View 1 (cartoon, rainbow, N blue to C red):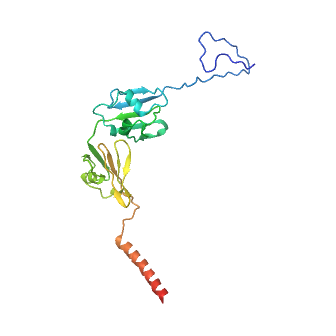
View 2 (cartoon, one colour; view 1 turned 180 degrees about the horizontal axis):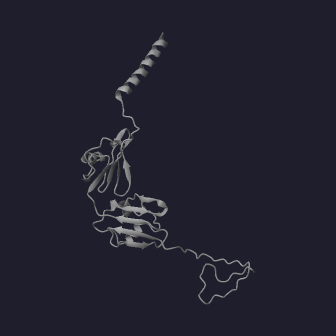
View 3 (spheres, rainbow, N blue to C red; view 1 turned 60 degrees about the vertical axis):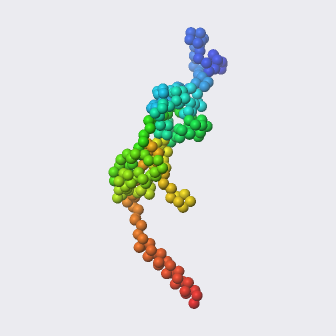
Length: 235
């Protein structure tokens, strides 16, 4: 009741040596949180590293490159480009990471700060590209350097009748997604890397097919109207 505190703040009282204080009605008991204390945070590292396993984070600033270094680095069979980085905290899910860039430069923006519950897996090299979705024969196609997404779709029997090849995209082995786009009026088609997956979506049933004759007729009507107005104004 007189507001006195017993014991230094933030430190546990020694067992058996702390004074026993008889509490009285309306006393307030304040228990301080120990400075810099937190529950143990762990990440899981599996696959082609020399020492896979569960690792406790040693500091809040620990990054992806740090944990790989603690695991002894990658094995000779490791495929760094195929990393799977999964974050369960906040239901984030998979994060696309450029591991070769991280290993080359620790200042890379892909050198993520690790969080409790993160899992990292490094696979072996895979020399195939998986083709899925609305194609005639979903298969794994042998990787050919420099080939675009269209080559692999043709190798899988081409687009199915309901396939929307225009909107096909590739999930690169590191989790990053690339889709076709137009750059400076030039169509760009992504180039899959070994271990990637191509997906061809189905056409939207609500999309009407392009009718050349109907479109040409509409344009002709508009031009005829402009011509008629121009002639009328000249009179």
